[in-house]
Length: 488
Image 1: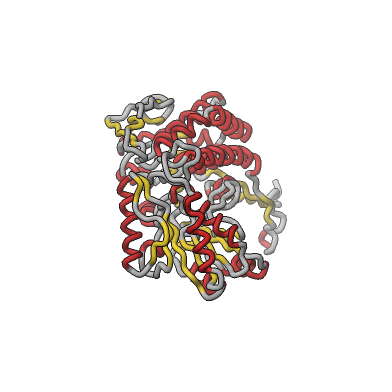
Image 2: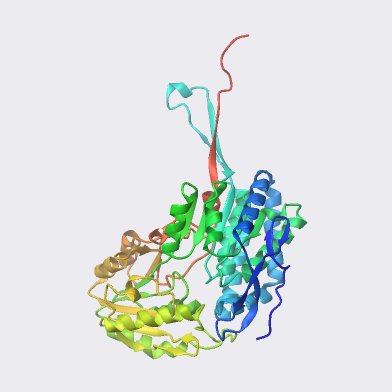
């Protein structure tokens, strides 16, 4: 592959300029291992410099008029829209994700940025009745929302542009400077995004340091999240890392979007073709590297054999190959270590009694789309987040048993149910212990303006610009006694 020159300055966007780094690292194209380009590697000193710059401008950013914050976000939207084709290509190269998924990622990032701009005008407070007790008679009270301060956003490798946007857009809308730390494997899209937003900041007279990016290792991340000057840490990634960040960052506010092993329930009255289509779309998009991709499928015993037969017959619809090809739906995982882990989990499931009815193994660097049946509890392919193109199917006696099985997980992000019964649909909405219940659609459905987040080990807090802005602001109560009643 031809070495790609980054479309932004060298170094890291820290302070008002770009700070040179002592080290760089080659970013590899996961599909064939070729070098995409070199990326800067940040240090603890870089993290501290970014923190110093963010803290220094935080008061000024908090005072930015609403119209200025809105204009900045709209200009950033225009900058990204103008470069969307190049951004799609960059995402394919650094993530190895199929082009179709990278196009969707850019679309969603634009929606998130536009929604963040809209939320600037919706920051408001309310009056409060203070006279519920006699001591409050004659007093006037209201609350407003104020920025929480410096925000640190740490993102995963699977959707580097979109995940960064969900940190940056709401932070700016709330009036907070933000420092992003992308995953080491995928720094390029986040660096370019920061450049596009900083150019918009320059055009609107806002300090460019409102958005900064620091790359680097665990020590860099620790320097960012443990600094007591930080108002909030927003993390997207694995549960294990999220738990560590929450402990290390305390008492700083922490928002966690963690892993899952999303379930899809197929009732005996479901449209089987629609359910099969949902598994094919929802289990293998982004090569299975999505926290709400279909992993567990619980099928009523009356339709289980027919469901599995239709699923395996249609698995060839999932095209495997070069992610640059618009037809490709599954390509290489982010690195060979991830691929090896997925294959090992598959084999352990088979050794524990599961049946592999389709797929298995690799085509070059690509893990083939796989279907495992009768996967027992106690194996990672069922209990944990596999983050690969593997779907596990289990037969259940009835819908009640299916809902219980969905809940018998330490995760709880999204789950879906296919049924034609309103009674079943509302039972699922009532009983499933997850952040989102989707009826007759993939659990991976997400509108970026809706509240998004999980329960249990899937995290705390909610994303979506409206809800993230609330998380990144604090209420400030104003209490006024118009007159003390005293004389001269």
